[in-house]
Length: 147
Length: 147
DNA sequence: TTAATTGCAAACACTTTGCACGCTA
DNA sequence: TAGCGTGCAAAGTGTTTGCAATTAA
Image 1 (cartoon, helix red, strand yellow):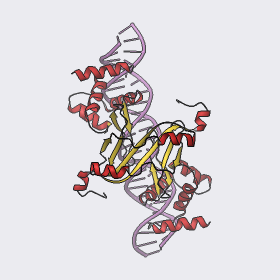
Image 2 (tube, rainbow over the protein chains, first blue to last red):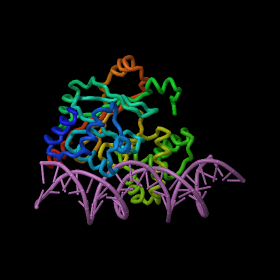
Image 3 (spheres, helix red, strand yellow):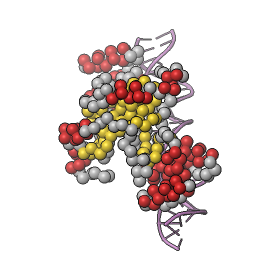
Image 4 (cartoon, rainbow over the protein chains, first blue to last red):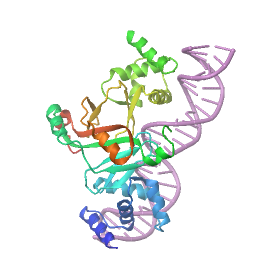
C-alpha cells in the first residue's frame, strides 16, 4: 500500500491527476520485469477487477510516457509498442529474436563515444538506444533457433 | 545502366525473379543516402514514370527485406517503417529527434562487449542495433529544438 | 507453360479521437 | 464547480491480403 502513495506522489509531482487507472498502470509496470504492450496491461487490470477500457490504457500510457514516467519501445517486425516503468537508470536491452522477450542490461559500454561523435558531427546528442539481439537460453533449449 | 545489371544479378542470386519494380526499388534505395519509407519510394517511382501500386511497394520491400537485401528500421513515435539498401557494412545511426532524419555512422564502438555479455547471460548473440539521438545541425539552426 | 508477381479493393491490427458523462482537486 | 479523465463507438493510419489478370523463366 505504501507503494501506491509513492506512485500517487509521482503523479502529483508530474502535474497529473491521481486516478486509480494511472496508479494501477504504474503499479503493474513497476512490478513487471520486462516491457509489455497495451493489451497485456489491459488484461492484467481486468483480471485484477479494475474495470478499464483499452482506449484509456492507451491514453494513460501516452500521458505517462509524455511525462517521462514510462519508456516506450518498438521492436522491428513487432506491431505493438512495449512500455516499461522508467526508473531513470540508464539501460540497454538484450532482445530474444525468437520469443521477443526483452531483458535489461545495466551496463553501458558507450563511455565517451558520444562526446567524440558530437564533435565530429555537430549534432547535439541527447541520448542513445542500444539493443543487442540473440537467442535466450530458454529458446536455445527449446530448439527454436531460426524460427 | 551497368548498375541495373548488378542489381538484376543481386535478385537472381537471391532466388528472386527479376522485375522492373524490384530493380527500380533497389536502384532508388541504393542511391538515396538515408532510410526512406514505403510512400516515399512509391512517389519517387511514380514521378519517374514507373507505374506501380503501393501494395506492390510493400510486397517488394517485404520480399527484399526477407532476403536481407534491405534493412528495416522503426523509430519510436514514427509510424512508418524506414528501409535502406543493405550494403552489409556494419553501421549505426545518428537520428535527429526533430526532423527524424537518419545519418549513418561507420564506426562501431561496441568492440568485444558482446563477447563479455554472451558469457555473462548465456544468450547467443547475433547482432545489435545502436541508434544515437540528438538534434542535427540544420534543426539547431532552425531553432526547432524541443518541438 | 506455369508459377511467381501485380493491381485493385477490401480487410486488418494497432492506435487515436469525438462526445457525453464522471470524477479529482 | 471547473476542467481533466473515462467509456464507448467510430474513425484513422500504415500495412496486408484475396483474387483475377499479367508476366518472367
